Length: 345
View 1 (cartoon, rainbow, N blue to C red):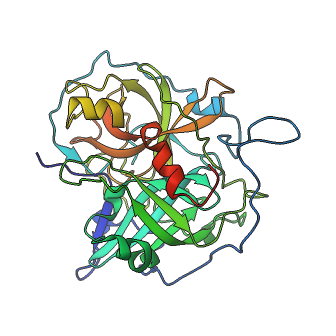
View 2: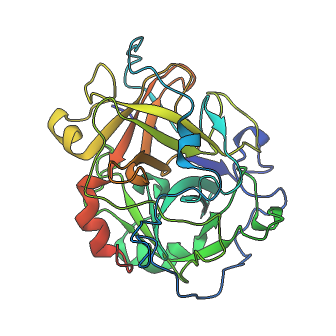
């Protein structure tokens, strides 16, 4: 069974075709720029020692409730569109305000044949969670993973468009970071699309002080249950054949669905129940091409702060018509994430 993924690669053959463009800045196809922030002692975003309240999983503007004003309707009209998949941005949903999705980052990846883009989640000052398949076709071994290819990757915060560059942010918050190591899950299997998860370690830690566009999602030993409404976000396509090279950052409410073949593409019933989540619920509202590696965040019953529940992995063949998508479940991989992170998560 062929499995297409949710990231975008721009083939650098002759002129870059606008229909495939998904890079930051029209004249900035390379990755030689480096506006990496200076090393800082980032505060603990897990909680505030004085108030006892957690500071992770909070929006940089407005309140969390703003993200859940658009309701979704479970799976009442769910249809099975088969197992054909596409690279999943957000279809339907809402435009994000500046700093609203501060845990979201944008990845810019220089491949031998073009530029690729994915999303990701900030888990710690130096730790980014994303999808392993974002690096398909470039990673051939652990040594290259840790050293050679990492120099071709940039992490950008504060992006409101797929072609944004840090200098577009007049507030000065948006920042670009270089990557020290890329660690794919050791059992990642791209042919079966299992263990589709990766951790990036930045060369220099992010600061969260006076940086409303940068925050962490909470880390909890928790997963959402069927019926929970969560948030998925990114700058992917707004419909299946979208050719706009400057797509907006958006978010959409999705319902956690039963992880069964009738509702979501299932590689192995037992494995999928443990390792992945199925989410969607409404035709015309879900992630799409260009959203790979991006965050699924859900409200914690502890305080309603947002925790990392999943990583965008794959979506339906016709983005605007598919109501369900497959995400790698954060909870299942928590021990591994912590073991490879340089941060105290």
